[in-house]
Length: 198
Image (cartoon, rainbow, N blue to C red; front, side, top):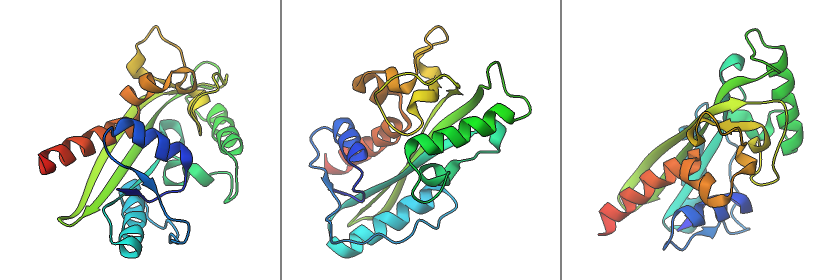
């Protein structure tokens, strides 16, 4: 399978979640069109269709991001470029946290409920298939941990329990994959692949 991405974090994370599958990054010569969708599912399909058309192979593509309730769901599909097209993870995170701190209803220290969302598109000979996963939690202003990427150092997942204040960036990879939005979507994908291949 080809993952329609050159993001090494995503390739490694999905390869860990989908054991037994030979997951390859998108060939360098394949150009991806702009992500113009207004939902994660639309953007995942845009990337998957481009990879399928270019390679003819079974492809998967994901689009994922963060939705912050007090910011009306922002950054959403703009999560990777919220502070600008060439923004770093740190710049995107700083912008979201600054907006959250100023939002009406922000909790102690400028915290707020949020969720990670992941949509995975699979295109194979049977057609197009979509899988969705979420990870509920809250954003905090004090950044912790050096694992993960993106908004992980500020995101405390609900799934680890009310007494566990670790951020996603403080979890080991196995813990993160077990509860992450990408893990949830990939789990549904894996079940689908197993049911269709026997």
